[in-house]
Length: 152
Image (cartoon, rainbow, N blue to C red):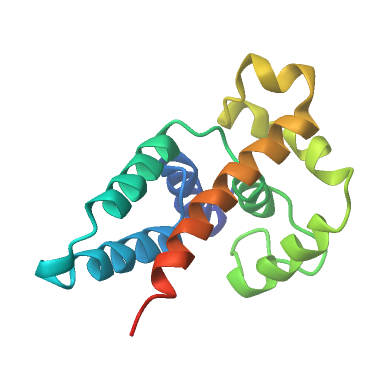
């Protein structure tokens, strides 16, 4: 893989390793700031929930966005340079990929599988497994959005 594309792969692999992207971390920090903003009303229960969600993420299996992002670096079309990576173009490419229900199972069975440990559960029913991981991700994001919507 060319250096430019490899550096982008590192960025996405770091997201996979952390089980969250930069956007998630920013939301988490803003939500904690909100919950700590009034010393008289610090919401310990809400902080505990966000903390537990973040702890859970460390052990999450990869969710579909991780797979699509890494695949977008590994697989390029005839309009892309094999030497560089265009983030904007690849976001659109991923959007198109998500419309094809058979693509995700295909991507999981490419060399990406070596980078992403899915565990025993995924071998039996990959589609259900990935749906559950994405649902878990969405639950965490909804909680953050709920707190962020309380911003004065």
